[in-house]
Figure 1: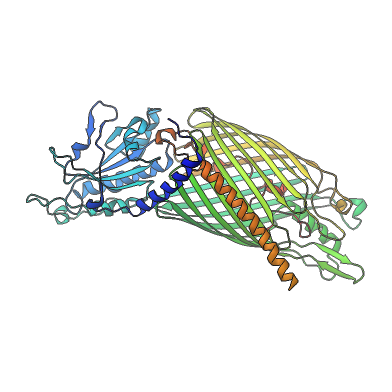
Figure 2: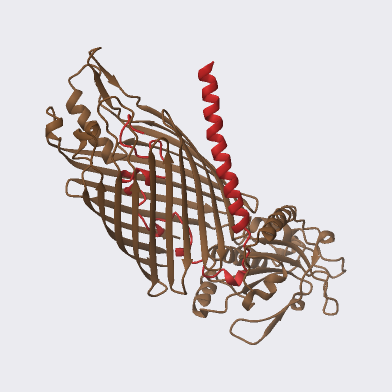
Length: 549
Length: 88
C-alpha cells in the first residue's frame, strides 16, 4: 500500500497539489458550493458504541483527525476543544442557535497509552477511532491534523443531507473555523431558535492560546591551550499563525598565545581572552495554508572565532607601535528572509532563503618596505547569500533535507555549498541520522564532511545516542604577498555519546565528544602561525534545556 | 568598459551556476517530493528525533563552536568564520 516515487506521477502530483491548494484557498462556506459528507459509523474509544454521522442531524459537526505522534495535532486538538466545542457549548450554539459539536477522531491503533495521554492533555470529550485512517482517506488527504466542518442542519433522521463546508489539512487557528460555523443558517422552521440573543450574557469561552518556548544551551570546546564556550538563551511565542523568537548568545575565547620563535622574533607569550555578544530576532508568519514567511535580523560585537583573535594578537605584537595600526573591534549585523512552501501537505517542503550580512573584522597588516608604510587589508565585508532547501518524506521511514547555498563575499570568489541530511527510522525505537556536505570555492578550497548518529529510545522519555563526524578541507586560499594567515588543510574526527530526556513541558540533552584535529604542515609564508595551526585534541561538551508551556 | 564587461560576465557565470543547481534541485524535488504517505504511515517520520528541528535539545553536532575550527562546515555568517582578511 505504500506510495512509491514515480516521475510521471510526481509531475501530476505537483499539478494536483497546486490545483488542490487553489481549491482549498478558495474554499467557500457556501452550502451551494459544498460537497456531500461521506457517511461513517465509528466506534467510541474504549467502548463498542458506534458514533454515526446521522447522530448529528440538525447540528454542525467539526471533525478533528489526530494521532498522538503528530506534533501539530497537539495544539490543534487542544484549541479546537477549547475554542470550538466549549466555546459554542457555552453560547448554546452558533449565532443562529445551531448546536456545534466536535468529534475528535484518533487514527493510530498502536500505543494506546500515549493516545490516552494525548486525549487527556488536550481535554478531548468525544473521541472515536478511525484506525488505519479509512474515513480520513475518503477526504483524499495525506496528513494530520485534518479539520472538517460539516453542516447537518438540513439533515433529519430520515434524510442524510450532510454537506462539507470546510476542510483543511493543517490547522490555521479557530478564527477561520468560527467564521464558517457562524455563517451556517438552519433551514427556516417555525421552531428554530432565535439565535444569539437567546444565549444571554456569555463571554467568549476561549481565544487562541499562546505557546511559549524557551531554550537554554551551553557548548564548550576545550583543548590544552585554547578554551571556547558558548551560552545561548532563546525565548519565543507562537500565537496562531504568528511566531516570534529572540535570542542572546555569549561566547568566550581563552588562548595561551605562543609565537613561533624562529619566524616571529617580536612576539611574546601571553594569555588572551575575548568575549562575543550577539542577539537576534525573528518573526514567522503563516500566509495561507501552505506558505510561511520568515524575517530575521541580528547583530554581534566581538571576535567570532578563536583564530581571528590569535591572528589579531599577532598583528598587535608586530605593528601596534607602527603608525597606521588600529586596535580591532570586530562587529557585524545581518538580515535574512525566507519563504517556505509546503507543496505536499506534511511531506514536502521547499524554502527559498536569502541572507545579507555586513561584518567589520579584525584586519590583517603588511609592512611595505619600499613605501615605508603599514598597509591594512580590508576590514569591511559584505555577504549576499541565497539558498534553496528541500525537505521531503521519502518513504514512511525516511526524511530527507537538501540544501544548496551560494555565498558571495567582498573580494572573494563565489562559494558553493551543498548539504544533505537523511533521517531513517530503523524501527520503533531506533533512528539513524546521517549528514554530509560539500563546499567549493575557486581556485582551491574544497571541503566536505560526513557524519552519523544512531539514537535508541530506552523509554519514550529517555534516549541515548552515539555519533561520529569526519571533516576534511584542502586549506584556505591565500592572496597576500608575504605573510599568509590561511589555514592549511585540515581533517578532524569525532565520536560522541549523548543522552536526551523528553518531557511534556521540559526536555534536556547532554553530549560529550572528543575531537581530533590534524593539520597539514604549514607553508613557508604561514610559519609564524605554526602554533595556531598545530594538531590538537579537543573535548566538545554540549548541554541544552528546552521548556514549552 | 572592459572591467564592466568582465564583471557582467562573472556575475552571469555565477548566476548561471546557481540557476543550474536550482534546476537540478527541482528535478530532485519532482522525483522525491510527491511521495504522499497515508496518514497512518507517518507515525515514524513524525517522531521528534526524525525531524530537522532547530530546538536546542535536538541538535546532534556542535553547531556554534565547531565551525570555528572547521571553516568549511559553517553554514552562514559573513566570513564563514575565516580567521583572516587576506585569505579566502
